[in-house]
Image (tube, rainbow, N blue to C red; front, side, top):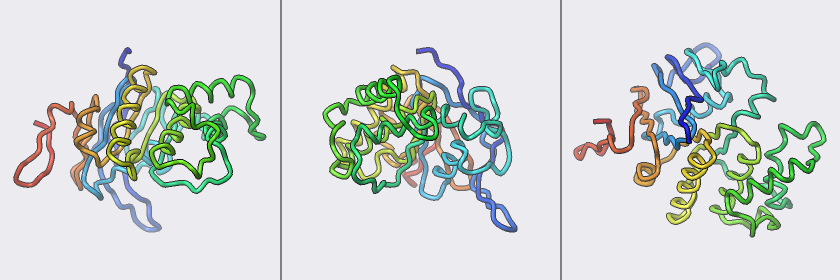
Length: 246
């Protein structure tokens, strides 16, 4: 697949706007994220990984700097248009009840179905394709509350695929999963980025797995901004256990 820049950050600072002040979590972030690649965001707790993901998703405003998505400023997108460009899978467990897997994946079509949310033939085909891509056909009639954590995470990824966005952000997609499920989910995301030419950007604490499957790594450090590079260039300091690019 051809590698193309889909996200561009220029002198980005991220943080939280209080009533009388702004707390800056990280700043000076300038880099790009490309289609056809799985990019993993790693770093210690409190470094700002979730804040960065929420800022890129449009949930939090940047403190300063620019975010371009597909060649347009993020701030220029209307909410309805952004929902057709970016899919987001958050780490929080949902408490959905009395809904089948197929119905939940179908909710990914909401940017296209209008106020009443009725699925047309085309929408149903997109849902079926997403279920097939993730390999959960045997689950489609199951009730969501009966799924394991690993199965539920696959369903949420299928929902994001049904949304048919070129960009997918995931916050700790392997949290709550056992080791085999972590491997399966990360391999699935790598395959989707490569075969479907998606831009997939995820945060994770599973460093060993991330370095095995990532095409590119972003390393966040507390107060130190972001460093980026290839997984093979990431080095661990044996004295401190901290990572840096060599």
